[in-house]
Image (cartoon, rainbow, N blue to C red; front, top):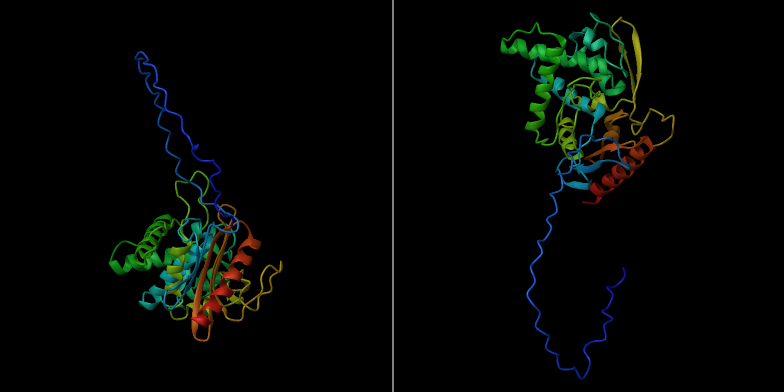
Length: 332
């Protein structure tokens, strides 16, 4: 680091001259000082799109909450399919509360069937078990399966309250999204705003906004999920087979290549034996995001990388942060 530059002035002369009195000048009229017009306030950011290497990142000790690494952890971004982790949590909590079971079936609406890929192509009127739908959103990241689960969950809650449950699919989805935001506030996810159960961008000319969150908020969701019974049994699968809406077996392959058993076709990351979740996300508007969890010697870490410009940046950053976090909990 360079040292500050020294003053090069030579100092006052040895024999200073006596000051010469200034001649009296006639008073002059003061000119008005021009006032610059106030600058317009900076426009509020309306886009939380991808950034290299990411918009924000964080790593925490899942047991103590100790932050092991953070970089712009409060910078908002679009989580894309990482949004499905909140849908996953609410459905697991429904099952825990006895509202319905893993073997119960949920029926697809026309709205659910209209979702863009990735999807399991469930048709209106077809049904799948809750268990297979959960696998579909965690392994395949199926947008139609997330909508089916959202509508089914909303209907179950309305019935429990004794409220009318024969609402339109759009109204049921809105009920579920309201619960997503309520649960986020309970978890202290102060900068999160959910708009969908699956993380898809809003349709054109739609008044619905994007799902928005931060790395710091998402890690709060992760800390709850890793403690949920059976959650990791869904998130740790590199692939699986479900029964689709037509009753046929459907093979699903995951997108989290840090989980062993699912070879990365682009070879951008190396699997970690200790990694058992959680979720990836991508849209053109959001970039690439990921929430990872891994364990070592009875300790667990959670890593979030939000809004990377591409898979290469995401996998490289997430891999470095995850390995460093696992090393850190081995020392502390």
